[in-house]
Image (tube, rainbow, N blue to C red):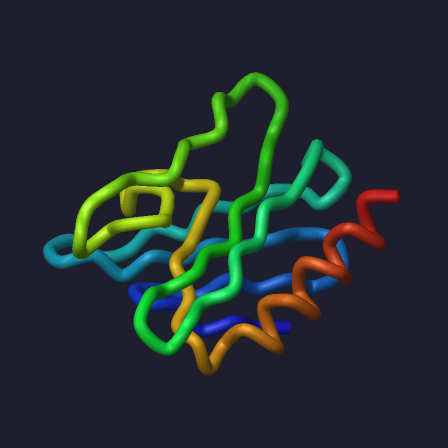
Length: 106
């Protein structure tokens, strides 16, 4: 299951979550998390005017809070490796991915 984000993708194969961000500059490096290691998920639906996000909470890491401002308002910072901003058209797929991860965590 793949979710196309604003500047990257989130994939889930039933056991591993892979977040691949495509920033400007060097080649993107995928960040992998086992679903069993996740302590929680955060999902904020995007609206037509503002992007939403998917965030995975892991033990030992402080969850990045939402930034304020016009461009990044309501989302974790782009540098957060455990989250990805999503556009409005990806809401349904992202919601299904979060549900699948929550089920795999149990």
